[in-house]
Image (cartoon, rainbow, N blue to C red; front, top):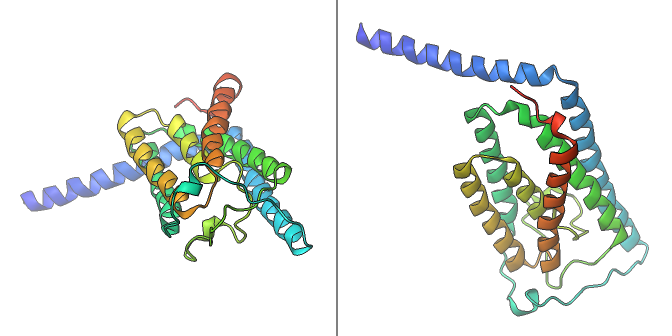
Length: 227
């Protein structure tokens, strides 16, 4: 009898858990801000991809983008750990997903999409405005991920660092922030060891993200929905 009661309690707990998730998501889905934010995010991702295609086509026509010297990279040997920076980005995204569900912060979903979209729109613009070549000895990322892009071109600013740091700034829970910061350190270390990005790309990722988050907090707080 006790075993049956325990099984019923577990089933009720699972139902309640998924019911709470559904309820939180319904409130977000009803908001117009979700669709505006999703549109901005898709535009950012699309423009980012188009910027890569633009550079690829330019190189195919004979354009030469400069390979720069770098105070840090010039002193660090190339170590092929390319799989790590994409893998830990995925882990970081998973942490954000768990945070949203655990803390019931579903209202932050539009804000995350909006700021992420703004970051990628700005990145696409700078990639085209400052078409630098990849660092010397960069041989591409692991074929399992390929940097999330077909073409691994365009380095300034770093999308891996910028997007990861932006998510870290949006998350308010200290424990989750520590976990995300640990992932970010691995991403940065992997980018440097692989020579995927110049050090200025990594630093600018922090600066761009902080500026976007500050702008969003001042002017776009309506996208962070109140529960």
